[in-house]
Length: 399
Ligand code: HGY
Ligand code: MN
Ligand code: MN
Ligand code: MN
Image (cartoon, rainbow, N blue to C red; front, side, top):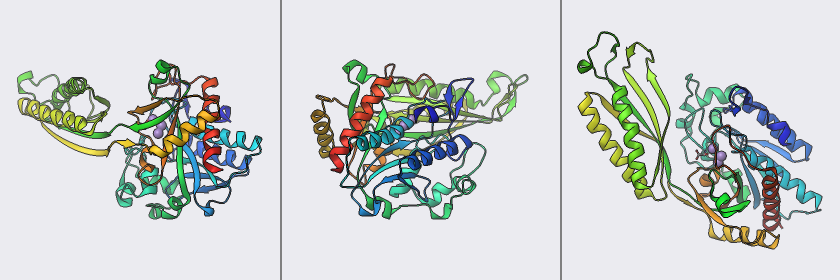
């Protein structure tokens, strides 16, 4: 199964993955999902929001045990972030069937669309639409770097964007949701734990900083006469890192657009996105407040202007204690011993679904901790342990 999916959307020159929602590579991943479902006799359900479901049993019976993750990637992302959860879900179904397990409840495998937000800028778009966490009109209007909107991209994939929005009937089917994911960090290496249970997801958000100045000639404009947005931007990058470090938070500037982006012209605008995260909401708020203030002060010195827009924000998610207990018990019964718990700064569809259904996460050890990069890797032995753990959890929840 893994061998079929692994090459899809892999960019040879970097070894990274470029699976952008409704693009050719991601559509190939969707086809893979449909084949994996058909090969197991699971009924495929492609919902109006762009999410995929594969059902073992009749979902109309309700109280389903759903597991899954996402198939899209960040630009030049790794092979495991997302797909490991979907492949492990199908593998867990195989393991349970091989043991002759007959679930008393429907078991669903899910793949949520646009989890990374790499194409349209909003993470967890599919699970946010499912749960009504985003206004459908706003979602339809989101656009990619080429100006293609979500509505247009969905239509090109054969979906009707007029139908997106909270999907109560599918939400009503779900009893619990469990997401398996590669760890995006090294805590499990340090704990020598192939499998861990999620306890929380840090508050995190994305802010767009628009720096505006005056375009001018690079070769004839005296330094003291410049109104250069790049200067204010550069100081903001340094200030973001400094303030985050001081507060024990995380701040990243990973996406910048410079307009008009010429080598011999001072730009008129620099547009930068700041991804910021912290273990506590007040810490995150204070880092952003401090950064905005510092940026405006710098802008007044540079003669530029800055507009800050909060594009997305997710407050702290503490996973359901009862679910955590169920997972810990199920794993202990099956020889996994005391499985550690860990909080993560990485966002997940589980973090969105937690507002609607009892939700839990399982993490698989990542030897280097590297993620969102071609070097992302998990040992096959740990992936198999993860699938075994997931099978045990599903068996416990669906019996
Ligand atoms: O960005 C994240 O935290 C997640 O990997 N989508
Ligand atoms: Mn990711
Ligand atoms: Mn992910
Ligand atoms: Mn995720």
